[in-house]
Image (cartoon, rainbow, N blue to C red; front, side):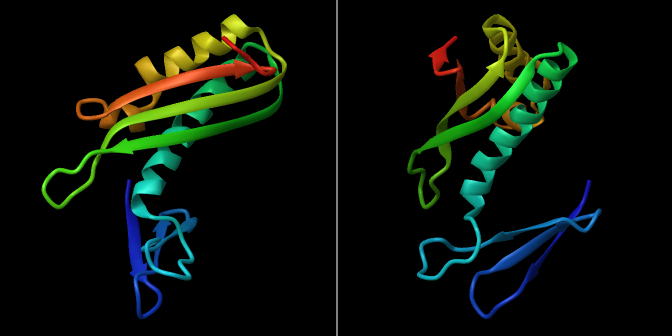
Length: 139
């Protein structure tokens, strides 16, 4: 796996591109007019995306009908010298459709305990918690 990063303006805007040519923009969001997400926001996005792919994949294999899938992710940071790494990440999954609640909960559990490489990468230093809601009800 390899990405390239290129600075695309005179400030802090970078384009990160993977080997397939797909890209995202990273920027210093503390500056006015930022055009990308911050690197730390991209970590939260990666957790949600990685586990989201797992959960949707598992539920599709179980023939669950997902009408809507979204996630909200919050990161709590701690000051360590000059850096502010995450100490805790909380992911809330919101699913709608003809979905068995037990299957949705088990899919999330499998993602975070077995499959999600992003949360597994963070795991030694960051507490990653999750909640699952199916049709507005916590499971």
